[in-house]
Length: 154
Image (cartoon, rainbow, N blue to C red; front, top):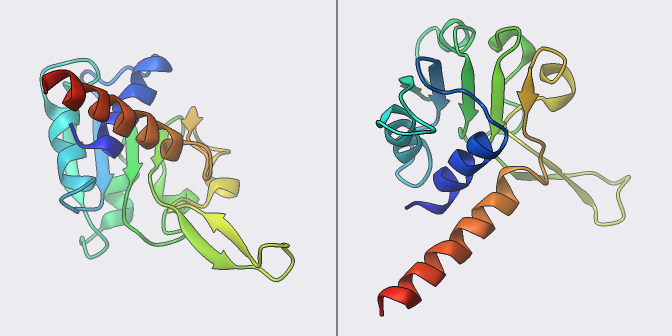
């Protein structure tokens, strides 16, 4: 199972996010996250059974499509790409992105941002994953689970 999409599924499951019958919009069509995520959200399972729209940064009327989502998964690879006007009131937002952006006020010289404008979008959501500390640790846990499964198969 791809580690990041599996981590997202595990988050949805552990927070009891209902996906069945919901409209899920995935922003990003990569072979590693976006495409597998869309397939997994549409599959017959829990989480799953969602009606999925796979979009990307060049999708016409992207804001309007996103604003219809019950579940919005941002994996577009652009910092702060998803803004509050793209999110439906009460939606679940999963931010898969992580970007290092220069910030001279920080000791490290940078700050971490996601694909979602967390400060403004969080006010509209029922649930939202933070960056850092959201999907990243779930990806690591999924990688460890995949490693354990590979060892057990050998």
